[in-house]
Image (tube, rainbow, N blue to C red):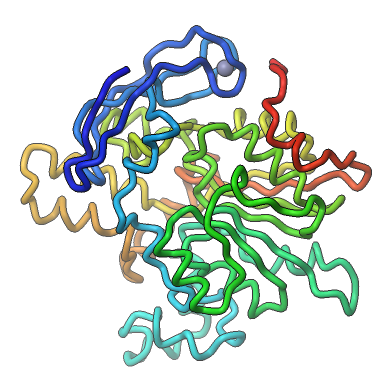
Length: 374
Ligand SMILES: [Zn+2]
């Protein structure tokens, strides 16, 4: 067991060697060794690949008890307030427009170009390039009934608020104390905890989402099985994860933005996430390569600030993924489109469905470790 300290919070992180979290194989080989570029937790962290199922995972990794110490209190995704993410259909929540629309889209003649603002949100929504609307159409259980949506790791509830304005009844869970309070203050049904600590009635949702979360959870197989359990038969799942199977990690090596060690415990490829979803019972699995270069901007920032942390261009690149600019996004769009077309996007959005005739395991069964299936 290795002990490291988060210097910002002075909390201790304990690292422990593990077997493959997906197939329990003990044999693996090193892929990369990297430091924490984002939040500066000291130490060097290793990503390995399982010799048997080829899953990429952090090993050794923080113990379950000390995992929370890897997250700063101002962890990025938690800062989004419910009003800060605009629905792709502006007309549904006009009141929110002033919060998140850049000034140059509000006051310059640019705002009169038809579709430009919509295109901007399409490009800058890094959590999903698949908009909520198709899900609304596909999974409405019938006229009159209000469809139920759930989000795992909903942060301050920005995405849930968006679904709510589209007519969904929404609920979410989130481990962070601060974001939960923000979501509850906005009137959302958000409970603090994880799928292991919050009990949810099986088969109660038509749609479950989890954006950039599955790579953080200790046991993705259990988490996806739990999501499967809380979906109604025929219900839909939508998740997103970084794509360790694309060209980016090969080019940037230890400087790849999306390693995000020691917080990303898993590094999926399109093949490995598809296989896992299948093993958890999902069907109709569709993988979309997101049209975004945000990982590349972050990685260039890491490279430029490595030797000189005060490098101004490097700092701009590092900050860029947190506040994308219209002009840059437009300039980058052709390359982003091309990479997505060749299935080399750095982030994946995955949708899947629970079969209509799926057996309904009890909530308890979902948290039991499934047997090795590879
Ligand atoms: Zn494995």
